[in-house]
View 1 (tube, rainbow, N blue to C red):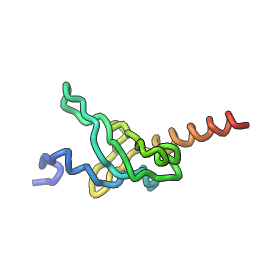
View 2 (cartoon, rainbow, N blue to C red):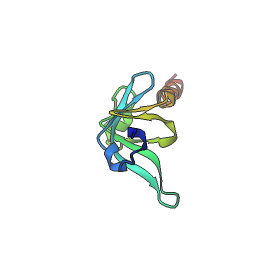
View 3 (cartoon, rainbow, N blue to C red):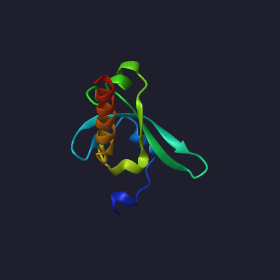
Length: 100
């Protein structure tokens, strides 16, 4: 029997590190956002954030939620597409434009 066919509890995701497909560390999964009506995971709540990408969020201890649709693979770590990096870079560019 293949490992992929064995159902796993969603709580096994808690504590796993999350990286982009470019190898950039985003954070560690602290909790999951669930849609109870459809019984689906809709987001990953991260803490222990990468301070370079999430300086404001890390300083305020709010954390971030990564949409589950960004997840590309789940194993010992969780891999998400690089949209997370692009979102933060766009946010930083907007802040720099406001300062200029």
